[in-house]
Length: 129
Image (cartoon, rainbow, N blue to C red; front, side, top):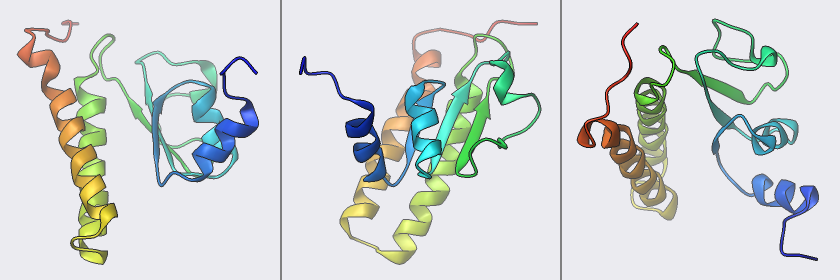
């Protein structure tokens, strides 16, 4: 084996995760196919299978879609994911105040919030329409 993961190995790893956050890749489809919760970042004009104007998909019941409002501007969908993750972290905090899952959720939330602000810090602005 060359060190690359097989689909079966990737599915096994995905099956052990609480949530997959990704862009439109094979991992998104595999996570949806094995029934794991998956949040997918989509461009303003996505591939046909994602349709338009919805945050779910008939293909995978555990998938939630986060879409760009403007082409080239990822700030809105990343911020939406950060907010959704914060809500999930709140649920984890309610269930397990100082457990490993709650700490992990808070760490991931901090990373996403930092990522959401990277564009502004770098002086990158969403393109005007």
